[in-house]
Length: 100
Image: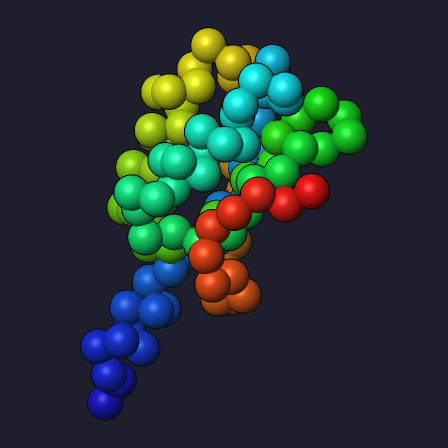
Protein backbone atom coordinates (compact mmCIF):
# COMPACT_ATOMS: atom_id res chain seq x y z
CA UNK A 1 0.00 0.00 0.00
CA UNK A 2 1.25 3.49 -0.89
CA UNK A 3 1.50 6.08 1.86
CA UNK A 4 -0.52 9.31 1.42
CA UNK A 5 2.63 11.42 1.15
CA UNK A 6 4.09 9.19 -1.58
CA UNK A 7 0.81 9.29 -3.47
CA UNK A 8 0.59 13.08 -3.27
CA UNK A 9 4.22 13.47 -4.36
CA UNK A 10 3.33 11.55 -7.50
CA UNK A 11 0.65 14.13 -8.30
CA UNK A 12 3.25 16.83 -8.92
CA UNK A 13 4.15 18.04 -12.40
CA UNK A 14 6.76 20.37 -13.83
CA UNK A 15 5.87 23.28 -16.05
CA UNK A 16 8.52 24.88 -18.22
CA UNK A 17 7.19 28.25 -19.38
CA UNK A 18 8.77 30.85 -21.65
CA UNK A 19 7.35 34.38 -21.55
CA UNK A 20 8.03 36.92 -24.28
CA UNK A 21 7.20 40.60 -24.53
CA UNK A 22 8.54 43.43 -22.42
CA UNK A 23 9.49 41.03 -19.63
CA UNK A 24 13.05 41.98 -18.68
CA UNK A 25 14.13 44.97 -16.60
CA UNK A 26 10.58 45.56 -15.37
CA UNK A 27 10.41 43.54 -12.13
CA UNK A 28 8.99 40.40 -13.76
CA UNK A 29 11.20 38.00 -11.79
CA UNK A 30 10.68 39.81 -8.47
CA UNK A 31 6.91 39.87 -8.97
CA UNK A 32 6.91 36.17 -9.85
CA UNK A 33 8.82 35.40 -6.64
CA UNK A 34 6.36 37.47 -4.60
CA UNK A 35 3.46 35.57 -6.14
CA UNK A 36 5.18 32.22 -5.47
CA UNK A 37 5.17 32.89 -1.72
CA UNK A 38 1.42 32.27 -1.69
CA UNK A 39 1.63 28.87 -3.38
CA UNK A 40 3.12 25.45 -2.73
CA UNK A 41 5.51 25.56 -5.68
CA UNK A 42 9.23 25.11 -6.16
CA UNK A 43 11.53 26.04 -9.03
CA UNK A 44 12.98 29.21 -10.49
CA UNK A 45 12.52 32.16 -12.80
CA UNK A 46 15.33 33.70 -14.84
CA UNK A 47 16.08 36.04 -17.73
CA UNK A 48 17.32 34.53 -20.99
CA UNK A 49 19.80 36.16 -23.34
CA UNK A 50 17.18 36.34 -26.12
CA UNK A 51 14.94 38.69 -24.09
CA UNK A 52 12.49 36.09 -22.80
CA UNK A 53 11.90 34.99 -19.22
CA UNK A 54 12.05 31.30 -18.33
CA UNK A 55 9.92 29.83 -15.53
CA UNK A 56 10.49 26.28 -14.30
CA UNK A 57 8.02 25.35 -11.60
CA UNK A 58 6.92 22.16 -9.88
CA UNK A 59 3.83 21.46 -7.81
CA UNK A 60 0.37 19.97 -7.98
CA UNK A 61 -1.50 20.93 -11.11
CA UNK A 62 -4.28 22.98 -9.40
CA UNK A 63 -1.61 24.94 -7.51
CA UNK A 64 0.35 25.57 -10.72
CA UNK A 65 -2.84 26.67 -12.51
CA UNK A 66 -3.53 29.28 -9.83
CA UNK A 67 0.11 30.39 -9.64
CA UNK A 68 0.41 30.86 -13.39
CA UNK A 69 -2.99 32.55 -13.45
CA UNK A 70 -1.73 35.14 -10.97
CA UNK A 71 1.42 35.74 -13.02
CA UNK A 72 -0.72 36.23 -16.13
CA UNK A 73 -3.09 38.56 -14.30
CA UNK A 74 -0.48 40.73 -12.60
CA UNK A 75 1.93 40.88 -15.56
CA UNK A 76 -0.51 40.75 -18.49
CA UNK A 77 0.60 44.18 -19.73
CA UNK A 78 4.18 42.85 -20.05
CA UNK A 79 3.48 39.46 -21.67
CA UNK A 80 2.91 39.20 -25.42
CA UNK A 81 3.58 35.49 -25.78
CA UNK A 82 3.82 32.33 -23.71
CA UNK A 83 4.96 28.78 -24.44
CA UNK A 84 4.31 26.05 -21.86
CA UNK A 85 5.53 22.46 -21.73
CA UNK A 86 4.36 20.00 -19.07
CA UNK A 87 6.86 17.41 -17.87
CA UNK A 88 7.13 14.93 -15.05
CA UNK A 89 8.25 16.51 -11.78
CA UNK A 90 11.56 15.24 -10.45
CA UNK A 91 11.59 17.03 -7.09
CA UNK A 92 14.99 18.65 -7.59
CA UNK A 93 13.96 22.01 -6.07
CA UNK A 94 13.55 22.82 -2.39
CA UNK A 95 12.15 26.33 -2.85
CA UNK A 96 11.29 28.94 -5.47
CA UNK A 97 13.73 31.68 -6.42
CA UNK A 98 15.53 33.70 -9.07
CA UNK A 99 18.40 32.24 -11.07
CA UNK A 100 20.93 34.18 -13.10
